[in-house]
Structures are given as C-alpha cells and as structure tokens.
Amino acid sequence: MAHDEQVWVIQREVLEETGLFQGLAFDVAPRLERLFAPGTTRFMPRSEAEDDPHFKQLIPYVILHCGDRYLSYVRGKRAGETRLVGNRSIGIGGHINPADDMALFGDLRQTYLNAVQREVDEEIHVNSDYQNRIVALINDDSNAVGSVHLGVVHLWTLEAEAVEKREQMITQMAFMTPEQLAAERDTMETWSQLCFDALIAR
Image (cartoon, rainbow, N blue to C red; front, side, top):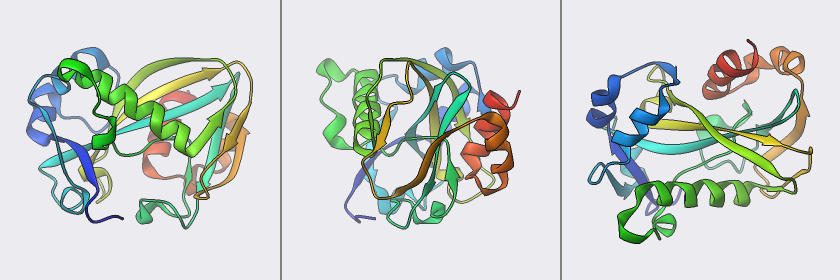
C-alpha cells in the first residue's frame, strides 16, 4: 500500500443516518442521495483510513455476468488489499482517488462513476456491450476489512463473455455457473459470499 495514497471516505455517522445495516441493503436510491450530498465525503490517507472505523472507504464492487455465468477470479499476491490475497472474488473494484475527482460543480456522483470506469478498466478489459445497474450497498462490520469499507454493488449484464484480465493480481479468472460458485463459496472473500447468497444463489 502506498502510504500517501488518498482515498475517498464517508463518515460512518452519515451512513448511520441512512440506517446502519449488516450485509446487503437494496433501498439504494435514498441512501446514495444522502451519501453523495455535498460535504459528506473527503479524501484522506489510506494508511489512516484503514485503521479508523469512524470512516468508511467507498468501494465500487462490479459483478459481471453473461446469461447464468458470473465472472470470478482469485486474488493473487499482487492484490492491493493484502488481507484478501488467496480469496476468490466475484467483484471488480477498488478505492476512489483524487484523480477521479474531475466532475464539474462538485458532482459527487460523477466523481464516483469516473472511479467505477477507471477501476474496471485497470483490472480487466471488457470487449462486450453491457447494461450497468446499481443493485445494492454492502456493509460488513464483522471483520477488520469490512469495518472500514462500504461497497456499492453494480451488476453488469454482458452480451458476450469477452473479458480479459489486465492486472497480475487477477488469477484463475473464468465465468462460472451458480452451481460452480456454490462449490467455491467457502473460498470467497466475505463481500463475495454476501453477494452470492443474496443475488445469485436465490
């Protein structure tokens, strides 16, 4: 981790104002309205944010699927979050940085959308048309990683399984059926387990 990396955070008390939850919340629109209100976000050093549960680092978490098959991979040793190395994931995403903050007139939603596109483009190349929907927020205060992060879960519906990896931290990447993912559930990072249970294994 770069000690001077600046990451986008939201005060925990702002999240609590919208109704604190554990797991996934599907009433996304009113929560994002509050979270993206002027004055609710700031950048702070990641080295500080990782140890301060008074703040939540906002993380886009993009799940890609084509038909009934979902993109999955294992986080390799070059993963930015070392505590997740070796875990299987169904989400692509990462931190929002000052470089994403190019929106006019302080439009926090545009800053966020800039970050989503950058994170996906850094990790994978999607050579397919797709539809993008925000389907949930994810919060997990049961462990050290989750207690300082808040995820925004996107579902990308691809027209074709045309995805290539760009980062070395992505290993064993493949599209998998719900049945195949169920067999790997115990190896998944917590956020992926929560998303799998609520969105895929229904």
